[in-house]
Length: 223
Image (cartoon, rainbow, N blue to C red; front, side, top):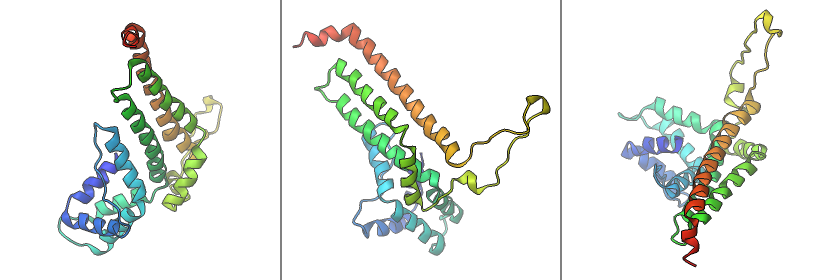
């Protein structure tokens, strides 16, 4: 994930970390957080910090690219991360995942609560499903926020020369419509991400529905 890679980049040398810390100190913020593979709270926190410190991270990368010429600090790697942060797609996904991880973290805490019983877990997994479903109609909102965040008004494929595959004569057409820009991004990755997450939520909810039907009576006897 991008947030983990950029954390690794800055933590790779004391000099880069110091530069980032100086920019973050100006707004009295804490520094970047690494991404945990295990805890939703850590993932939520890491993504939230990336979004909150977006401008400062960008400034730090620009400073390193323009002023730091030291052994062990790759200008090409610095330029790569700077390009990524200046892409409309990256800004869009960082905002989207920020919202998703925040909701997953809330649900995860409730699921792990000692006061949550088996039947409640099933209901809790229904909550993010409904939330994800609501996001399918909010593409324009995320795009507008990303336009402001990235200060870029074109998707990457719109900046490149677009090519359309020519069909054979027996296919009945001279060419085919190729989705580009926002139309392409709306389908992949936006819709793909949401569809996959909804599918995972259904699977988890189904498991707990089955467990509740089998062992729910044990919970009921407690009351």
